[in-house]
Image 1: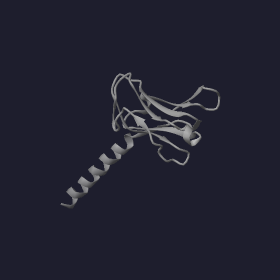
Image 2: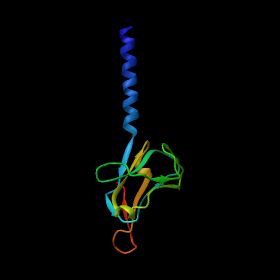
Image 3: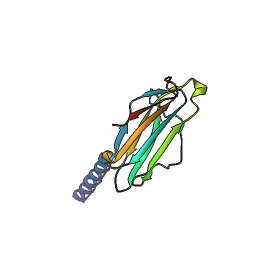
Image 4: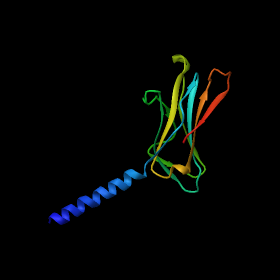
Length: 131
């Protein structure tokens, strides 16, 4: 009985470690935007990818309030992208942010960019790639 219990515990621990080991996190660099921040996540493969979450974080690691039409956790289908945005930064004088993507699958399947609108360089936008 003890051997069976030990075997079951060992199996459960192995399965949990395998599941935990599959999660991948991608992040962009941090940048300043005066108007808005947009994190875009693209599935660059021929199969759906599972994404646990997409967040835009401030320099202290706090999630900023975002809007999106995507649902996480969820799938992004081949060739499609999802956009997560922080708008109306002008009322706070702008802000810093970075994009963090937590995926269940292969991080190489994802292309993610952080677009910073109104960076003090005219109306240009700055783009930071996720690694």
